Image (spheres, rainbow, N blue to C red):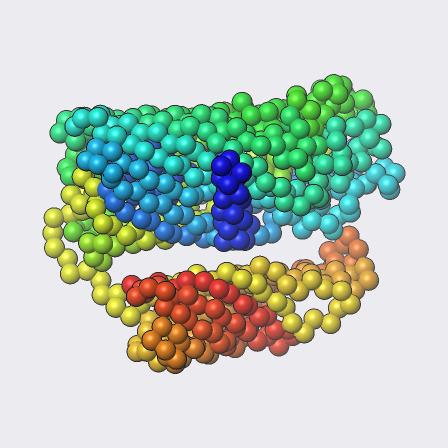
Length: 636
């Protein structure tokens, strides 16, 4: 049974990983700011308020208020992060660290889904599948490449990418019970899976050649081992209390530490031989409804990052004493004076994170019988101490302030459409001087998040319907409109270089209007990712994305199957980088309007849901870009 559960978790992890193309970097430390996009539109509140199936991940007792429903959604996550060390950060390093870069991979897809239902009048059950969080960086410049020491000890070279990629999935299997009109309780088995890889950290493997002492207890399992997977589970408990004729709701939620299997491939990187458990967390929430269609909610949420050795153990920090003394320079690395601090050991170095307290505030207003609008604010002080930035250039979770808005539109009694936008304000951290052997370090990040979720409602639950406004509204006529998502592969053509990696992940989101069964118009955004070509010492990297608009011609072959053709234009935003050895010789943007055309097939899975397989070309003068995708299109 356990083997079957873990196999299922791995399958879901791989599926979500493919959907995301890479993991997203979360915003309260590495946790997402709320359980689902509806919650995130209210600042992430959810301990004392939840109406969709995703809310059971915040408090399992919420399930008594969700009725019978299913939710399915996806979002586009756009983190912009950068880091620098050594002279670039403000201090000359004794080992001549002098590197800085913005991270590549700036767009990610985040899916979510869930379902809840009543088993009896008081007993409810359900599940959700959603991301708990993640960390990702992919720097085109190796930040930890250094000079001034024997060449064999200099690591991979400045032009080799460095980064980490971690995605964490959670599946709360939930039951809830309404004890009486005032009190409800819930419990969930929190199944979890984590996917991780690290690359470009070869410099750490060579520290014994530079310092005559090791930084890792197992250098062979420190970096470059590909993806590894970890599985485990924890318990989540929750309570809701409704008072003052349901105008006031209090909530409590507690989640135990999730004990995970170890990352065996990275037992020389993470403390306790590759252990990376999910930290214990808990919180309290309050919701007040001055009137039925106005909801004000707040949470205080605590995440105990410091209890997880790989996250909370201190890493390289400040070197005390005379920094010109080589002995003092290396003293900022704990393993140089205590071998038990070597990476991978039980007390091995980590990221040095502190526990984090997050404050969330949200408001929702029912405009009329079809429309809810909401807004929120979320604040959590960065868990990273300023003297722990050396390792955290790989995980720059610096952001603190989150501002969100959202809506839910109900075109019918059975369908809800929820949209959310989050702006995460830029935040930088700069280390004090004399940071071990790197001198100084700085990190920065800001984010944008767009989310869209569809809810199919068979029973809205006891309170959801009354929270809409009382005035009538004919609503928006969405007949003929549709939206979709496609995921697949991009390929750069007409590349003449001797050695080229021209294939990469690609994806697109789009929307359109179908005038009749033969003709429609469609626009969207396509992430064409990048390619790398090499001729001798010259390395060329091209990255592109595009905004598209065109006509779509369809011909029904059967009642369910249609063939399609597309013809239009695309505004292609391309970025080119050319390096000769370690030197960046050219960096330029090349944005232009180009022809965009393609063919495909569409198959109706349901009355309002189509499966689409497509090939399309972005026809540029110097090179072509082909995008092949498979995905779903939802008709409103």
